[in-house]
Image (cartoon, rainbow, N blue to C red; front, side, top):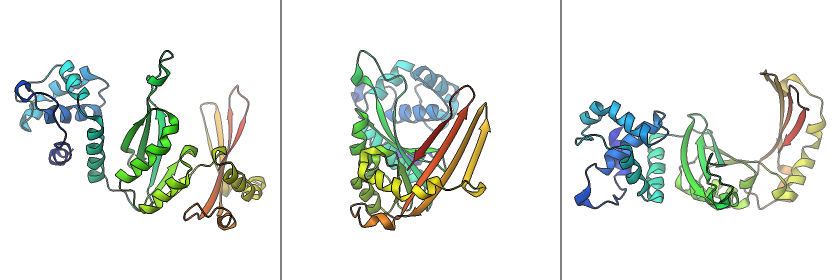
Amino acid sequence: MCLEDFSLHFSAIQDPRQSAKIAYPLFDILFASLCAMIAGAEGWSDIQEYTEGYHEWFLQQGLFKEGVPVDDTFARVISRINPKQFNLCFINWMNSVHELTQGELVAIDGKVLRGSYSPEERLSTLHLVSVYATTNKLVMGQVRTQKKSNEITAIPELIQLLNLKGTLVSIDAMGCQTQIAQKLIDVGADYLLSVKDNQKRLHRAVQNALKAQCTSPLTREKINVEQGHGRTEIRESHVISADLLNGDFPEWPELKTLGVTIGYRQEKGKLPSLEYRY
C-alpha cells in the first residue's frame, strides 16, 4: 500500500475531535485500521494487536510516535468520522489504485450484512450495495441502504462515483431498470442485467425469444459440468441477437443480445432442481 496515495485521498477527512485533546493523529488511526483490516482483523482488539505488532514499522513511517492507542480509542475515533465523507474518499482511492481493463466484468450486488438483523428491530437490518471487480477480486465501492428496495436509488449513485468506462456491469433483477441501463451507457459501460417478473412484459418476451434454445438437444460444446462433495451441477448457456425485441422495447438503450442460462442441480439426498435464468 502506497502511503502517499493513501494520504492524498484520505487527508480530506475532517477530525471531529478537539485539537487540544488529540493524542493520536487521525491519519495514523485510519491508516493502521485499514492495514489491519486488509490483514484480516475482525474487531478493534485485532486492530490494536496488529498495530502493536508492527509498531516499529509504523514508527519508520513517522506514525504513532506517542505509542499505540487502546482498542477503545480506535473504536471511538473511527465511529465519529462522517461515513459519507469516508466512503467518497475510499471510492476515489480505489479509482486511483485499480485500473479496470477493457471488457472487465464488474458485479453490482446488494447483500444483507451478516449479524445485522434483529427480530425485535426489523429496521436494524443493514443492506449494502457493493461494486466488485471480478478480475482482481476487489470491492471498488459500497453504499448503505435502509432496505432492499432502495438499491434502485443506490446503484446510480455508485455508477456516478466510479470510473466504469469500458467495463461490462452485471446486476441482478432488482437493477433491471431502464434508467440504470441508460446511466451505464452514459458512462461508457455495457450492461448485463438479470430479468425476472419485476419486468413482467420484458421477461415474457425474452422467454419467448429463447424458447427454441431452451428446448434444443444438449451438446457438449454448450454445457459445463461440475461435480464434487455429493453434488452435480450442469449449466447450459445460449445467447441470441436482440433485434426481434428492439421494436417492442425502444426504451432499453443499446439492447444488443438476449441470453439464458439453464442450471440443473442434483445433491445427494435431495430432489433435483432445474432453473432458467434470463
